[in-house]
Image 1 (cartoon, one colour):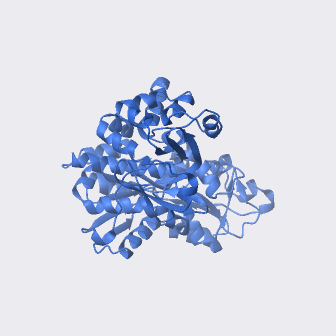
Image 2 (image 1 turned 90 degrees about the horizontal axis):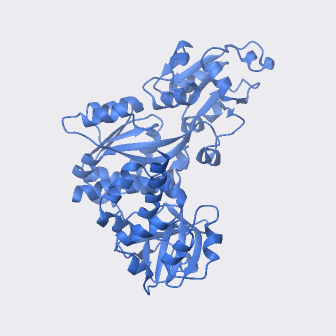
Image 3 (image 1 turned 60 degrees about the vertical axis):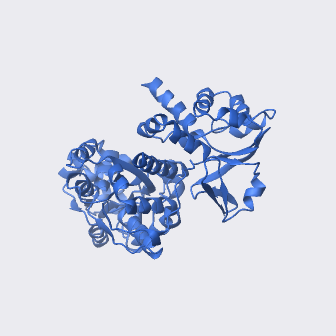
Length: 462
């Protein structure tokens, strides 16, 4: 298994980057210490990219990248590749033409130094692949295609220059909502609901004249509509799809092959009534004791609380938030939580009102629902960590989780409007997610989502 994982990681590296400079943490020092060779010689000098160079050769790019050039390579770091699923790797390896398209989209003719790129805000650069990379400058940083930031610029080679980036560049065509026709039906997670609603509104503001339906029914119920009833185009989810749900998709009269798209990060908010001034932090162990009714009064957590009975509020069992909480707190065993007889509801507003209306109330839900009701609730630190962008993205906050939307390769092939909307969603989600109350996914994760979309569309065209 370890050998397989190591091979997969190497395959990921060779698949999507032409001249990765070095492993994270020492890439800049390693590359800059070398005497300038060709782009591939600079990569080889890093010492651990043998398979990468073999893949470039297999794609027919070795002579090109060892040639006179000059070329500019935008090269993802090793960190980007760790998130690639095996199915994505397999799809790339099975089609040399697809692999070549992705690789050459990271190559721009000519030597484009960082200072040059800094002067190209709002412009684009045509790649060897033929499509153009969109360039923007955000907070004095170069961002490519909205989701790949230049983290190490100007690694010079004899036939060009390498810029290390923290995302994968994917040659998706820019979407004009005004040209998109046909209706789109989405349903699922109440946590993802506000984000998908905002993205649907923005798509409509861009000129889309069809109808986008966004329903909040919970992750489990959303996958039932998607995989059992086959009635939705997109399923919003606050957890990954379960194997039995994917099996239901495959068993439909017209089978569906789910495709996953990471769209953001949520920090699960654990909240109490603001009157409960004696509690500001719970450990994971204490949270388990509270939600299993081992502890039933707040004075058992802190004697200064006095006699305040604990009132439990929880999302319902069809909720992805419930599933995530059970996994994180009770190792996937929902029995202790249900035995504690909390008030369950699929409607997060009911939970907010319950906590607000009970002096000993405690509830948990997506961070956006806390921010929307912050004046009525008090958020707790967990294990001494406050939920915010840094702690959620790094995983330091113990109740952070990814947010997803799902479609199916068959739907993407049949309904161009669904593919257009997902493309638009992935390209623009970082502009909206903070206002909704969630945190952006890493550039690497959004890149993987874009790559999954590109592979599905590429397969549909063959």
